[in-house]
Every structure is written in structure tokens, then in C-alpha cells.
Length: 123
Image (tube, rainbow, N blue to C red):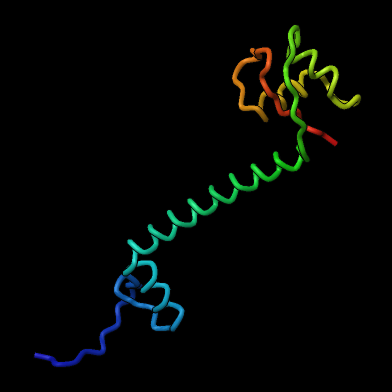
């Protein structure tokens, strides 16, 4: 029986051929041997991305409201009348009412006499 053979097939057999370059070995080690590491890396990067986009959204919304003033609700006041008296001239009243509700964490437009509201100063 022959111990060594010099036979080369005419068909390409690339399944068993490994890349012996440094980059090829590194690629193989990272992606095939460390699948658990890659899954964790993707999850961490996704969470970091979502946190940063949420943080940036908060910052962009906060940049519109520079400061606020305290206002005590008296008898006969409504959010609409308060907004008409305190909003900037260029701003729509509905938008200012929405900002008052957002700043005071209100779900409805109901207010009571003696309630202290924070009114945003918008530039």
C-alpha cells in the first residue's frame, strides 16, 4: 500500500481548507469559537444605543424649556386662561397648555383653586 500520494483532485475542495493568515485565524477565533461572546456584545451595544437615544431625546426636549415660574390658581382660572395670560405672543395657546401639562405631569386639564402650577418660560 502507498504511504504517500501526490494525487490532486480536479474538483475544488474548499470545505476543509483553513485560512492560515493572521487575520483569518483571528476572524475564525472571534466568530466561530466565541459565539456566546458575540451575542453578549450585540446585546450590550443594543442596550447602550437605546439608552443613549433616550438620553438624547430627554436633552432635546429639555432644551426648549429654559426655566419656569410658580403660579397659584385662583377661583375661575382654567388652563386655557392661564396659558392666554402667560404664553409668548408667537406661540399657539394649545401648545402652551400642552407644555404646562407636561411640566406639571398632568393627564387632564382639571385644576383646583389654590393649586400651584409651574409655568414654562419658552424662548
